[in-house]
Length: 247
Length: 283
View 1: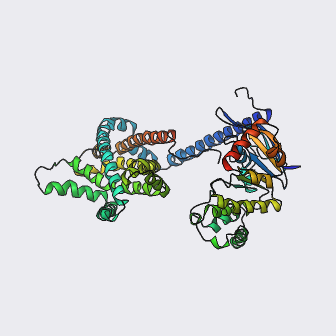
View 2: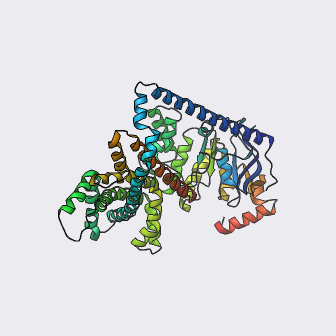
View 3: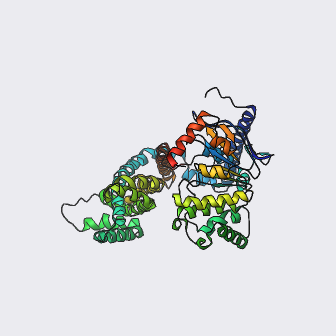
């Protein structure tokens, strides 16, 4: 059974239909990578799953429960999902450690000492143990993004959403973040990822989904979608992407 | 695009949200009515209420006093409008002086800091007395000696210091990367301030700025101590005839009636221009 299941999800902003009756399944422990041109609905899809946007129609089920039902407690749902944003979105007024312990202490009522210990453990894992008391703007982009991943991971989410997490990074910093994601994947974390890193998609994804005008035009194993696409649109997109990044 | 019809499930959700909204409205109305009833009954049943009502809420007396108080209010409005313009100019100038960079502007920075320190601390009433009675007493020729002008000057001096600090907070809240971006394009310091920093700063501080102007509107009544007849002074004169305080209440209602549209208008304009930041989505 899939951990996350989207059925007929629709989201429109005025006349602009961003998600057009979209179906998608993510099994537990699976990594699904969304690719597609900007404006194809990738980020909106992630925001809908995290209930940062309200869907106009359709059902999103997480572990069998309909999270799009207006009766559900959205805060509860969100606290079980980790999301990492393109621009890191760390809180600039808090130290790295306080960024990570904020939700455990305030939302999950973890005792302060335990939360700090766990946060330090997470920072150790992402290689930032020495930056615990630094403010986000003292870190490089890659370090900030790793801290943001630690912040999302500290709540032990059942699902991680990653929205273009390397797009704002210098090329030489992309590697350290992707390494971390590979590690998460190998530990069995369920991930839904938007990215332009085709090499990463090829390596880590169990399924690649090509979104076009708010619909999954093509979905399958990376070898099939990326190397032998069935749809002309997918081929067209891949050609343009490889043309610009040289991958 | 227009062919999309919500599914049965979505219609059920929409209906549910509508029911919730309706329930919220009902709760809001019921709780307001109960609270209002409690207040009315609570105050109305106090032993002194009939006396208080006759003294403060005498409709006939209020109607009688309205023209005089309204005439006084017209003075408040004129003083406030003229002062507001000057205060914005002086306040902004002080804020720009205080945030200026470079050693050459050190005296300006010190002046602006000292000015705000002094005039924020001095009670407005003292400044009004000093200017309103002190300056004409110097018997300098060529200076105006109408009370309203010196009273207005006192308001401008004091409020400029408040407003300067509001502007300064706004200027300093604009991220340094914005200055960097502007300077990188070859804009000078002044151009950066004028075209990049100030437009963002002013939008951010609009609500606290409005606060100061609403406060100014009421404080403009303080110049009455110099013998000018504004709304409050007019109410006081009316009251002196029969010790009925209804004219004060009338003046108060008129002030409130002035303030509310001003606030709503600013909110409306700011929201329509998208000055209040994103705020999109359900979170």
